[in-house]
Image (cartoon, rainbow, N blue to C red; front, top):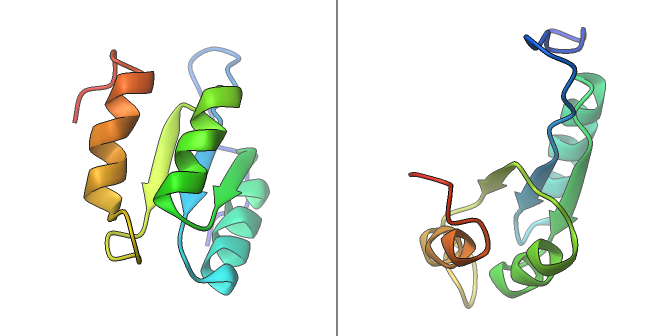
Length: 88
């Protein structure tokens, strides 16, 4: 596993949102991203993730697809409303 920060063509800090209903998955993902020099926010559900998107600048989302309530795919569709420039 690489532990050096990912080199970017310019000095940019990407902020990642990790969404998973399992706490240990969020914790491990956040630790791995931190080792790579990528700060992140975490959310335990799609609904919580949408609240994070309302208050934080997020550049990428890593989401579980199968979660209680809102699925990861539903979350990503709604996330486009917050960040219309995203294409996926």
